[in-house]
Image 1: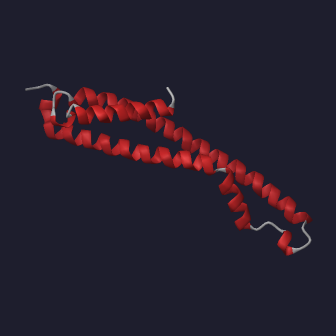
Image 2 (image 1 turned 90 degrees about the horizontal axis):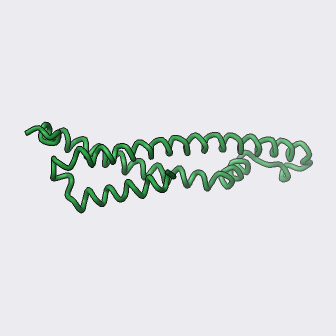
Image 3 (image 1 turned 60 degrees about the vertical axis):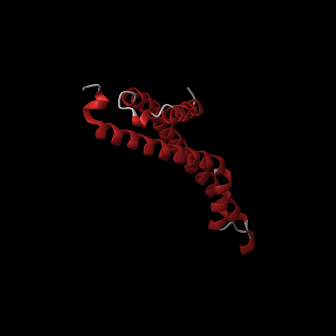
Length: 135
């Protein structure tokens, strides 16, 4: 399953939650919550991978750009020919922009998923034994 497949499944589950009024039905909530939590956990795993890839790539790009800066500054004869630290940061920012955007997108989806999980946990706690199938 890809990250987008998991995101689509979580969205579909949220729609089911709304359409079937799962939050108001203590009998439906445990099974729904179990499935949502499973896909939420997959999303967290994917997010952790994206963050890790981002950090590794950012470090690589900084290393490459810093090496380039040192080379440019070594042969530069005038101060306006030298690459500043600000220019280096701008170059890095441009090169990692796509990864940064993906990380931000997943971060927002993870937040929404966490809020939904917390809400379901709260409902389960409030329903108590009723949501566990004990009458």
